[in-house]
Image 1 (cartoon, rainbow, N blue to C red):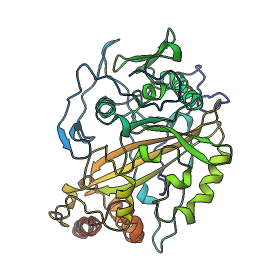
Image 2 (image 1 turned 45 degrees about the vertical axis):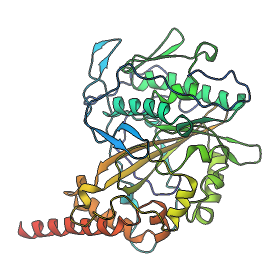
Image 3 (image 1 turned 135 degrees about the vertical axis):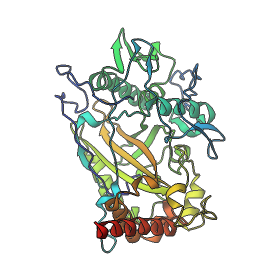
Image 4 (image 1 turned 90 degrees about the horizontal axis):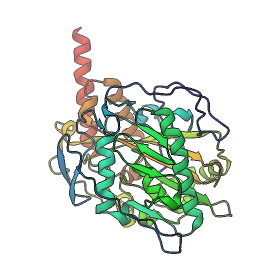
Length: 419
């Protein structure tokens, strides 16, 4: 959701792009250098909800956790990932790109400034990001599409939605082999994932998997498509959201932007008009990105809330699971920073808007030795209004987090004075 400030990551090299903005020209080598890294409906009026086929051998590198939101054993994003085996090229260490997003660092001290979109122009080379957790997150998506098909995948009926999803897959078939050529290859009318060994036909008459589901199993991002209804209102027409942060894709389907964000405090006052204007003016030649943050008591990527649960959270009625045992002494071990990198881009043919959400989770303790981040997070929590803290389901976590951050800053001050 478009409700927080942005934080700029380290830039990567840019490559020549054609007029569509995100469609790459294949005149440059764009390999990344890094460490390691159900049938579709025939297009009738029945609403599409596809279930992914099970993996032959689920990825099990790292620990597994019981996820209370999904009711099954799913991977967390905190596990170590071994280098993947390439089924089409033998043993291989794949390229990754690793970045850090700390959007709370841009929240200014002093009185609350209101909600901002925080949108920044994006380099086309940064459209999608693949990091060392690719294997486990793609496998987690696959499991969630089996366990929670209605909640994680939904497309409105009709050919318009299908055409938008197909265009997205076609764009990925050009972009992925260009920027991650060791991971993806397009040949014989198929997009090959060299990591998983899967191949998806680009001709929709030749492929049983829905194009949006295929796209979602290629990238770590959650994918949502919105379309102008002819009255200047952008409605959610398709989505593959395996990693929601306490909202429901199913309940948002078909809604325009202002109703999608209805539970968000201050949205109607601060953001509705600028967001509507931005969506109408967005051009294929330039995509945009932003980021947001939260503190949560669970590391799980899949954290579904119903609309009623969100409304109750805004009212301060949500009780976090770890409130009873939480203190300023153990908050670093029990709590997690959950940051999202979001992008908005216009598809040139169908004119749909693609909204992507990429989730990054880490233990709060990982910033213990970074007093600058501790100070900025404390400031962000201090200036954020209570209703918005409630909306982010940080009720009951804020005081312990603030106490823990204060301890870290005091410790670093003592060390500095002793030097």
